Image (cartoon, rainbow, N blue to C red; front, side):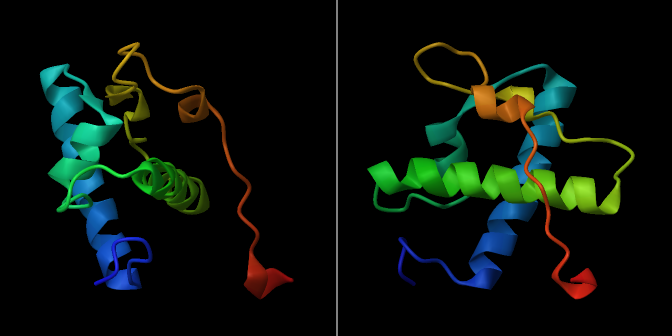
Amino acid sequence: MNTKKPDTLQIMQWMIATTAIMRVLEEKNETITYGELAKAIGMTPDGWKAYHRGQITRLLNSLAAVERKFTVTTPLPYKRIVNAATRKPGAGMYTHNKIINIAAA
């Protein structure tokens, strides 16, 4: 599998793993860095590369989009994923992306 362009199944597996990790972090009141998350979900088998930051961002944005689309009752605790240098969540963790419903267009 090309690590720069994962297939749909791999992306979905990363989303499921990320969801589980965030839930456990919330229960334990702990945080994880973007790099640690990438490693934990199996995104970085050959080590961290610059493009992984973009993949993690797109993965988290996709999870947020799913939450908004399906109006979940318990939102994911995105604040548990932090910047390694600041130990604070990134600014993007508090913004929302629009979902375009292609079927309605």
